[in-house]
Length: 268
Image (cartoon, rainbow, N blue to C red; front, side, top):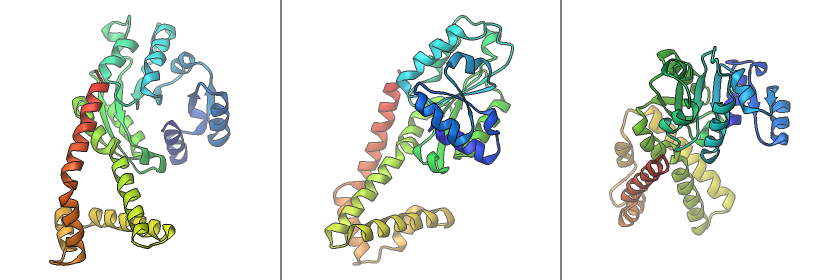
């Protein structure tokens, strides 16, 4: 996901490659990013933090505490320059980031480090992501605007109150997996009724692409579009009857609710 940000921001011209600095624990990864995107690379998180105006924390949630603790201990104590902190670590709430990053700082010093928490999803890798973002009390309107401008380069973004990010995670963060599972199942179903694997893949992917395009461009609701292709006694009605028998809609509702609960648990 960090690479998606780098690629989008450099290709769009929002930042020149020379303006982007990257750290990573793996030397081969740093070489790859430097050679591929022309960005600057560093070995030290605290040094990069001190020399940056916008800091994107694109690390795994289990690694974020260590990164923030290291920065808090070794950062420039003067905090002369304001830095916008953008975290894309799933399930790591703002209050935990504040506890670590704001350690030993007074209120005016904390205000120099506004925090934006972002929940992107994997289609950001192909610049078609959906992100939810939330701000802490120190983030200004300009901070929110700047974060949104960055996120628009990898897809779309909506601002939420932070408690809503658990629901955002369940719908859009986890959502691609629901679609991938459906596509996987339809391909298997196509093969089961006699299609070749290649034909089943092409039929399924193109059908989903077209259906999503129709959803975007039509004034009709998803329910109405479904009704439009469901003739009485026809093939679609037969298929939907089976999905209803297996409580397909309720299964999706319960799956999203389970993902939201788990996201909430991970943030405690």
